Amino acid sequence: MNAFEQKRCQSMAEEIAQKIFINEELFNAFCQ
Image (cartoon, rainbow, N blue to C red):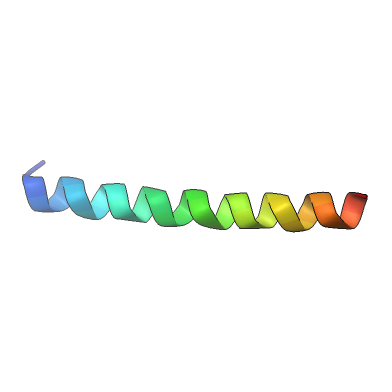
């Protein structure tokens, strides 16, 4: 894996993590 692919993979992982975090916050808001 070259540096470009590594960066792309990392940014995709961060994007997914942000979406999961946002969904978790929404879920917690509904459950309160």
